[in-house]
Amino acid sequence: MASKDRKRKTAAAPRKAAVKRASPAGPKAAQKKAAEAREAKGVKHLAAERSRYLRGARIAPRRIDGNETVAELIEGTFQAYNAGRLRDAAQLYAEKMLDDGTTIGLTLTGALTPAGLGMSCIIPLIEAGFIDWVISTGANLYHDTHFGLGLAMHRGNATVSDIALREEGVVRIYDIFFDYDVLLSTDAFFRQVLRGQEFQRTMSSAEFHWLCGKYVDERARVLGVEDKSLLATAYRYGVPVYSPSPGDSSIGMNVAALALEGGRCIIDPNQDVNETAAIVLGAKRGVGRRKAGRSGVMIMGGGSPKNFALQTEPQIQEVLGIDEKGHDYFLQVTDARPDTGGLSGATPSEAVSWGKIDPDRLPDAVVCYVDTTIALPLITSYALARRQPRVPKRLYDKRALLLANLTEEYRRANG
Image 1 (cartoon, rainbow, N blue to C red):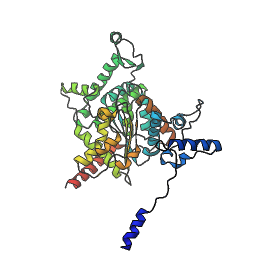
Image 2: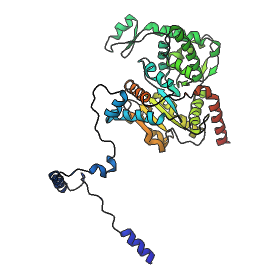
Image 3: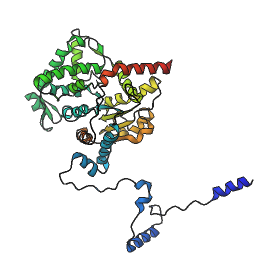
Image 4: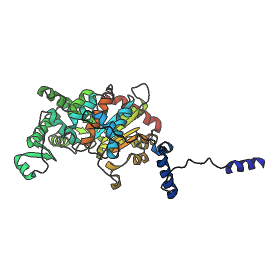
């Protein structure tokens, strides 16, 4: 009985009085008088030290003088709103994702390569070992090839009459103009190489793009336009490039055209699904390395490439029955809203419910509502300024090893 009484007394003991501070819910007259009294006495206001919500860095940006680097501009003046999220994204990428143990997948949606982001951003990131595998729309890879073939894209004016452009034989991607013959020449190049014997079989889109990249690289060397094509660079650095909808581009259209004359090139989506899942599982298990690692996704835009990168975890967990928790890092640049229900705008917290993102790693997830053509050059410059290059993982060369690991874990989980 005495024991119970002691428990009651302990439970009823008064709590230590909380530190009083101004609150919108508090007594206004008293707070007003307290503030006036502090001001009259010159007492320093210390509320910031008393609230856990006020522990973020003070907003006190550096004065812009024209001498700051891009990294200094991002760290010193990108304080809030989407600039703040862009700072968070750049720092997440450089400070955490670029750890040697993290495998990074980049997804590309929207007409990014025609705007030159392939050669200005993605190629330097691949060369620095900062991108390990890529998922892209076929259109980005098709337009990327123009540069490897020495063909020109030009700045234009989006208000020009499209009827006048058609009469001049000029094609427009918003404010990017190019000659219609650029399309014809690129189509002719692909049809020529796709007739080769090595293409007359079934393969994953990674192998398909690796072969295409080899020929783009050869042509670029002959023309003296090296370091212009993403496909050629990915080929040289062993970076696998996937396309979830290979028929939805001019490259796929040319594959289909050759099928009418007996071509036997087939891009197998089953291989793509398993290879990408194998890359992610291998990253987490440390396949080919001495210890387990992490997986990060860097999503430029949204659409099918975003889903294809994120579905790797449901494929591993839900479909194959292998114990896993989700990607460790999530970085997305998008202009899509979440409330329309589309995948492009789906937040990383929503992805947790699908098993796509590890819930324990959710703080390491950033979404920037910024145009990719603005964000990616800034993030690229920041990463190259703040991190030393990594040794390329050459995941294309390790596909068989990664698939063997996936297959073995699948058999153990379902045996």
